[in-house]
Length: 304
Image (cartoon, rainbow, N blue to C red; front, side, top):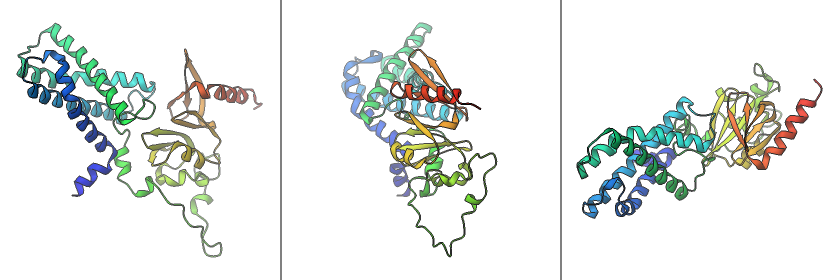
């Protein structure tokens, strides 16, 4: 029973379960269309084939995304190009599943030109199926990849403090000792205490430090500091409100950054990104671009 409960409370596993359910729902349509030349077999056999192929694809892409997130691969890329690159990578091991399964069902045999054609077919069909999944689950590229990234599963198993910590009752002035963290500045902090921000009080002690950015990942906000990052179950608007008194600004529908953490602005055509002090590169949407440019111009023009 405990494992069953974990399956439904862990976001990464819940996504995988939803994708497997979607594979069952999509398989009749794929069986009718007949990609990979799987058209001569009885309909039920084709449905079973496509259920397995789609479920395997969703799992393969999720694993590739998770490995890339844990290793920090492609973090400098914009979300959509990064996702396309991961689709191309996931198609390589997926060939080891599609090839043998298609051989059993149709007699397909690998030849150099057939292997290349199979790869591109997997990329196109897999990308299409994943786009359908994103639309079905209401996900955008800016919101989150399908796999829960960067230690999310570990963090979400920790104390409920990471999900939602109720506001503590104010202690009696006559009996409560002053909080030790507010009395002792952290090394290198410009401000007297990182706990001046209510949002930082939600983080594990090891990651409490000067704010860098807030990044939305599905329904969670990933709080970036100069000491690392952690997930908190919050909407972006609520997270931004709790960033006070740290000066900062929203630069994208999924990003808020601290003013002091912005190193510079990079433009590539209409696309723009800001470089941050912790090595991240965050997207700037057209809606907020002018505000960021004015802020940087005023900061650069200010006397030292």
